[in-house]
Length: 202
Image (cartoon, rainbow, N blue to C red):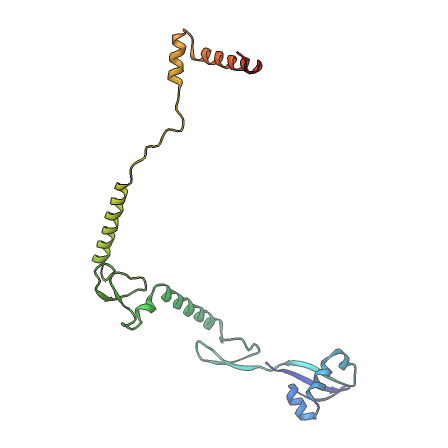
């Protein structure tokens, strides 16, 4: 996008246009005109002032309408066309995700061999492995039967309990000594503490 400049000689207006146009009209070099734009060049008698940008004509990518704009990267003439372009991109992504584009390919590219029965067929999706639902169901049944046989061959291991309770046994010992469960446990605790205080000597 070209910028429009105005050339002044002191306070007197000379001409305007792009740098190339001013160079053709005045016979000045383009490097000299660029130097006039700099702060050091503006202090001289001649100066170059930017007065705007030249509008360019662009063609809308959605409706094909020709419009004027200062932004060369602008692709659409209105907000409606920009929204429609986004809708088209989303639709294409959805079609690729749903394998619609795969179904539109030639039959030679979609020709495959069934994994179960070995017959050739035309696939409708990129992940299709079986020629029909019957082959798919039979293959799944075969996998389930194979997995069940493998499970039967593995011996079952019983897990040992993490903690075995001795409450019943201790309670029977207490009754045999005509004591309660708490009295017997207290005597055992006192005996252990007494043994630790004596350095392990009985």
